[in-house]
Length: 214
Image (tube, rainbow, N blue to C red; front, side, top):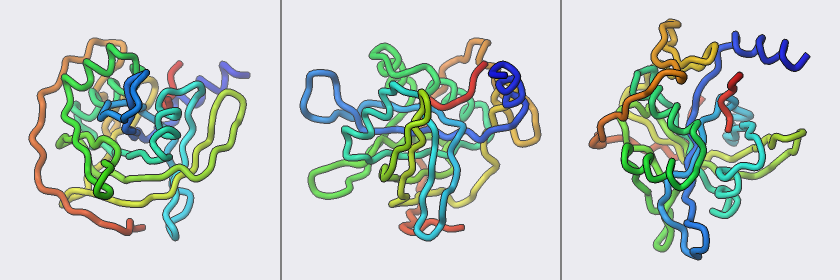
């Protein structure tokens, strides 16, 4: 039954979101701006008033551990359906080893936004492929077998001037909303160029390890 269900779910298109969290180097007390995170295909809206989202993540998870250590704060990124977005998503399926983090920091630009006078928010991916992002705070965890179902409150919403179609994951490949293939993870994905951030607008009240693999 497990194999049959897995094969079925490979044929169900999934959204792709990226979670990032402000983590720290092992043995260090102060949090560093490390690009710790995961690509997830299970993000869904739970309620709009007040806004809450949920996602599933397999344990043990460095991303989930980092969220707990960072006061339950993390950021969710929504990506457009471009090749750059597919490469970003694929990178965040590679785990969070020191080597992967070093490569990720070299390839991508990250920024932090101050939440008060002494702290910074979760790392923000600076890329034209990011359609929108949400600052979230973990409020509840439910353990189901080897996964955690996480529920989080949305505390801030940020988007560009125009929303675009977002990235899909279907049959083990990253695709456009039209169904055309952007990236097959089994093939080598070349690094993308660093990007200079354009102007964005902030919205305080949003409106109306997680990628499944065979």
